Amino acid sequence: MSTDTLANAITTHGDDAYLLTVGEAGPHTSFVTVRHTGDRISCHAGNSARTNVARVADVSLFWPPREAGDYGIVVNGRAEAGTDSLTEIRITKAVLHRAGPKLADREGPCPSDCRPLTYG
Image (cartoon, rainbow, N blue to C red; front, side):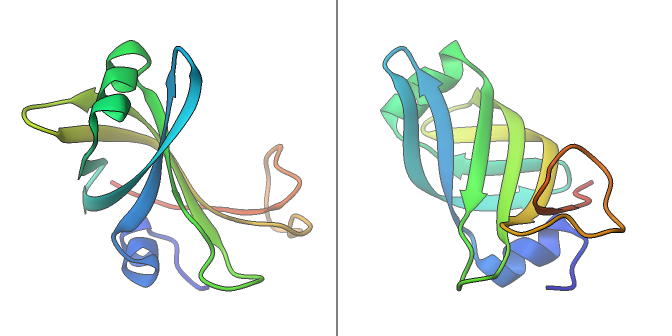
């Protein structure tokens, strides 16, 4: 995949992702449809996810690889539950990620093939 922006990656993978939050009982995963604008992603989240966000604002979004050997998308951010079920996430990091050795032109601690995405 030759993309370096989150907008292009979402266009390729689609608007449906998994929202990962942390509650008192542990991790919680929700299937959500996202809208990306600049450094923010919004989605409608259920009651459990919104309760978790009120407790721990750090969340992740995950788009799985579309096929074997492809990249998945991982987005980390700080969430805030708004009106109704709308949740706003301020992006703090976005990467394409897949298993395999880190390419020679990549820096950072991840030993896998991670490619940072711009999102602003």
